[in-house]
Image (cartoon, rainbow, N blue to C red):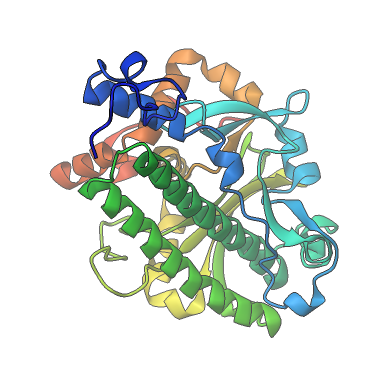
Amino acid sequence: MKIGRNDPCPCGSGIKYKKCCLNISYDQRLVKAFIDSTKNLERESRIKQCLHPNHAECEGPIVKAHAIQNNRILKKLGDNGIVITTNGVSNLFFQNAEPKGRGIASVFTGFCKYHDKTLFQPIEDCDFTATEEQVFLLTYRTIAWHYHKKEEQYNRAVLQQNRLIEKGFFPNNDGKVYLDNIRLGLKDNEYEKNLFDEALLSKNYSSLNYVIWELPYEVLFTVSMAHELDCDILGNKLNDVYSKEPLKKIYLNIFSAEGKSFCIWSWLKIHDSLFAPFATQFLRLDTIDKENYLNNNLPRWSDSVIISPVLWSKWGEPIQQAYIAHANFTSLYIQTEQETGQHAYEYMDTPWNLFDE
């Protein structure tokens, strides 16, 4: 449809076309439309739901649940109530690091008031003693958080795409592939969460397998991560992204408690053939190699790493920027591994050390 000079500009500014975008290049108009499409995107794509499978028990409103314990974990990391999150949104295109109040650092609207309180009592109100139930609930909360985040990611992508279409910019093939990939991720998450829900309802906590690396001091960061691990430490293929089968997830929770730190890898026992050998490989690494492996991989695996401002400040700006760059160029490091045949903990020592005491 041809736009008349005196017609309202399709960019939505409310100004006549001749006084707005008529003399602006296509690329300039696209950038402007893209920036406009992000306004209030985060807020308008939020989902409020209770992810507990027994909805008949739901009571009270949907609350801002903490994916990572606020009083027991984040309070220790905070400096005047502030922590550093690595899921910043101040940059439109890249993952960023931002200071954030610990009260909102890992919240998501994924449980009703009743289930948020009662379901997680064994890890919220009790000391961590690594019981089967506690490890299961830590992992369940991790899958719930990432399940919820993926749904909101899909909402954002659809909403932003519709906004661009309204301004006359239709998605290219890359945009369609991006949306298709999110849909596949939703499908994989649905498969995994259904398995967890069955175990939760039957209290079959032994359906989960796990290993724990315990450190004799409190680390200055925390992470709650779900990941479709591509290869094990020796380079053996685990998940095949080209397969039609759902990608299998392994979970990592690292946190401090009672003067110690715990690094817990967990997975559903039905996936033992994939992840049990990896867990054994990890435990057999020397301490320095365990640290190197995680220092190299955590920034590029997950945006759910939360760091103490004390540690972040100690690194200084050059190391901070190196960490952020590492988080944003995953494909480059994967290519390096493939070309050199080296593994993450071998090919570089990172200038940052998340495990600094």
